[in-house]
Amino acid sequence: MMVITSRGLTRSTLKIAVPIFILIGALIIVWTLDGRRDSDLHTRANDDVRPNPFRYTGAGSCSSHSCHGGVSPRREKRVWQNEFSLWVVQDKHAKAYDVLLNETSRRMARILNLTAAEKSEKCLACHATNVPIEQRTRSFDISDGVSCESCHGPAEKWLGPHTSREWTHEQSLAAGMYDTKDIVKRAELCLTCHLGTAEKWVDHEMIAAGHPDLIFELDTYTAVMPPHWRETEQKGPWFGVRAWAVGQAVALREAMHRLARRAGNRTWEEAWPELAEFNCTTCHHGLRQPSWRQARGYRGTPGYPTYNASRYTVFRHLVALVAPDVRSSLDRQVNELGQLLQSPQRHRREIVARARSIAALAD
Image 1 (cartoon, rainbow, N blue to C red):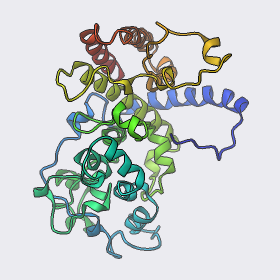
Image 2 (image 1 turned 45 degrees about the horizontal axis):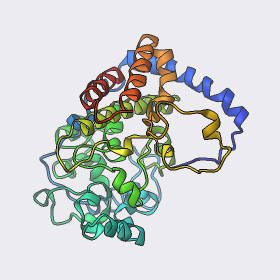
Image 3 (image 1 turned 135 degrees about the vertical axis):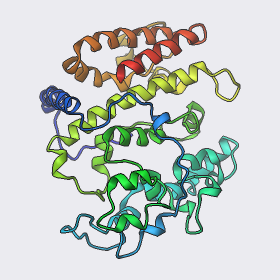
Image 4 (image 1 turned 90 degrees about the vertical axis):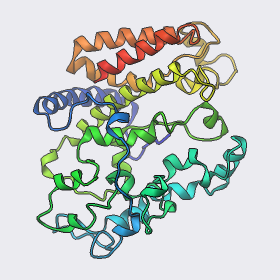
């Protein structure tokens, strides 16, 4: 879990600041949605982030000094031309494959009875740009990790032309580039790994073996990355607030799709109930008494894990300001979902239906 403490905010400051930020965020989101600055939320990430037919040229194809491999940023230019250098030296995405080579990953692979982590499709799915062999050019190297084309799309058709002044962003999109400038699409792409899809996921078995739980917040994670992009004036001073809110909405929607997918699964490959959907501290906690857990009391039946609604807990306050009628319905349905998950086997069909309904409201 990533915690940022350098701001030095005290508890009392946070009590004042959080409601103010939520109110400002609500106004900004209303303005954003009314102005349609980004694509709407009525698409599923798994539908929108679909396989691309073009080929991947590898991060090395972007590393020329005259392209993106410069040492110092050329800030007077539209493109700084040091984007590759920033990524390869400072960005954790560039180290994603190397993580599979450390002792923790090797131990996890042994526990999970996998091949070597750096060769396991389960691990490579998110620790590298793991595309089919036929989509890799000779310059492609899977050890580059989560490289340029993981986010920007296969460069085969736009790599050369996009250096021309006459070449437009729209032409690049038509040639296979992914539109990371659109906040919704950016959130959807990030969440394919930072939350998961039907093809790649982190479950309780992997967490128990040592993999961190998947926690993601678009604006915070963007802020802590070494920026290799220019925040244009068109995005406005409140771009971070919009990114946060859109990221929260997309994360809730995709979390509901994931829950529905898991509860509706009828094969032996995925167990149900999937404990990664529940609150970890329900089972993993200290046993000393007295403790705050006993003092607080329990929801539902003691001993039963409770649903982890963290992706809704803060976002619901923004919904209350932007769409109060939706907030009341979301509150009711999220509470009903938690009750259904007290008996996850008995209520599988109802859980799927309720999760899909919440996903639709999150749109």
